[in-house]
Length: 165
Image (tube, rainbow, N blue to C red; front, side, top):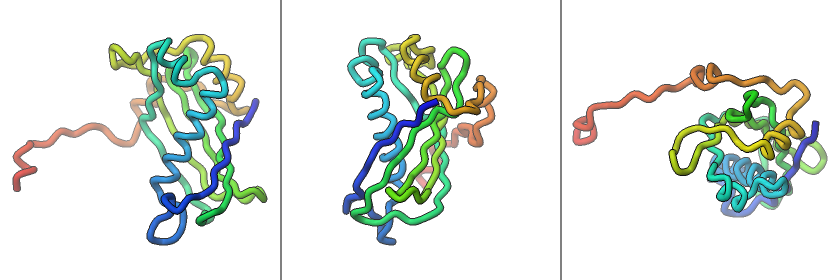
């Protein structure tokens, strides 16, 4: 098992009215950590374009423990704590740390790979499975379509007339 770390310096634009790291910045930091990880492991944009696939996050959740402030350096980790046997479904675990090791937040993101032409879920090439296994946590869960069905929200369309009221 390996853990990947990406370093950030908190910028002015990452701060909210409460003078700490904004919720949207946590999402952006996780996404950047994933893309940095993928790029460094031969799964960057050029490879994804060649394979005709892309990663899609379907559900993301956070727990916050300690505030992060302007100009602080933070480390965001990446582990894969779940993936399906074919690698088509995956779950990333991110931890936010100060340089002294203080744990500030945790995020978990569940996603799938999509075929960029068909816009439907697909399985990734074997190259991706190699890195998923290498960065899989010790107790990585085997994910199935039941994990997707168990997401807490379902689409519920409404009558568009409601928008004119």
